[in-house]
Length: 558
Image (cartoon, rainbow, N blue to C red; front, top):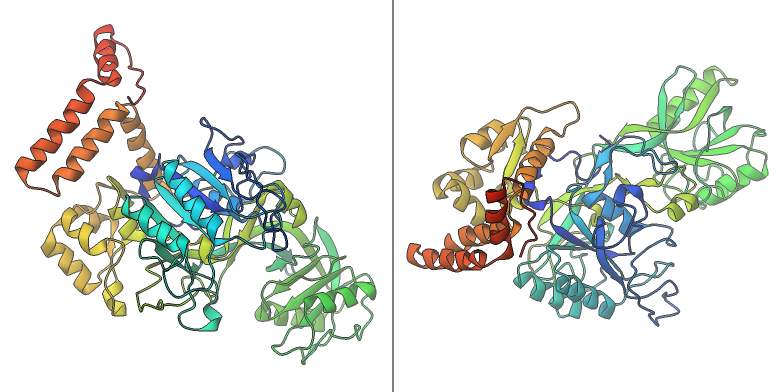
């Protein structure tokens, strides 16, 4: 499976299978087949609202709202990307333009999505009043989880969107906000509304692998490259020699016209911190000199040329190419538009951009982290065309893409399934802090205070079998080649549950959960109230009738 923020997760959560998740962002391209292909009550993207309209931007702050949250005009398709991380099902895609390089699933492919559009097509501004309205609207639409990838400067929690997040979370809705992408600016770089006491602020960790395009050396070795954002990478398999503009890679390499004949070839430049020009200048000068492509090494993502394919590669790969060309200047390389899984050297470590706490009130934020660097997911057809990719998927990075929570999130669920290879634990004490997001409260209730204290005090990591032995998970399953054995088993259990009366399941859950919070006598009273609710329901009548007629009941949840 392709590495999304969630395909490497080992715990699959039955309780999330039918949750309603509100995505407050640029809107969602619900026409994408991996996201259901439609909008409305019977669709994956079932609800939502457009608060601003297409023309909303920094110079036009007059919103024109409507009922359709479709995003088919932003170049980033950020909301569509987040929606895919949450609930995409890209496992059997056959439609041209929507075939991923590898099949993948979001964290809860059976979840219902809500799209709340707070950006216009330009995607350059979202106002606090609109964000606040979106939070309340998602709550009114009965979202179980609200996630938002937007924020701004502000170290304190007096803003209306932060207050809205706190109020909504107090009503039982889970809220996750990206903490920010300003980590390079130092401490206390998170912003509103993620600093709200009611929100779970998320930091980003780099993925272990990333979906990247690759070229092939004369030795049949792959070299991965990031396609330039201005014109894109190579659109088909192209064979070409590479001209190294300046083998020593001295500063400002390529900031003037190429020093060698690059006509009909791909030119390779070095990038150094402090250079007087960027990738666009270098690659456009190469194009003017007759080059058919441009590569820059020792740099991250680039814009590149606006007229020829461009890409960036690592320092190690740049030096590898220089060695090949030095040995054989006529060596032929094959540039492709195919993708593979490229290892990320910083995988498993905090992303360089992820914002750092504390808040202005000296509260601990962010509380959790997840994979947000190099995440592969869905984008709109418009964004794919703009990015010159043949299929509507892309790799993006940001704290907005990091859905973490790990064990703490699993503890909030009714049923937990783990693979034997799972790694579970609350390791915060190793960092001098304590588990947040309910870890210190839910774990003792599930496995008992003594064992919970042992795990929390030591920060010990358990595998799936060990977690099962202490009743931390309901079942443990053998991992499969697709790394989704726990997910498949969770679907089987979910299918059993959905065959039952939905109102009865809800009332049983309410009776159990509320009963555990009170004494036995009060708990029995809670049970009686829940029983009275189902006793006069249409579902009960249908259940008895179906039993008498020896058929499957058709429940309505009322």
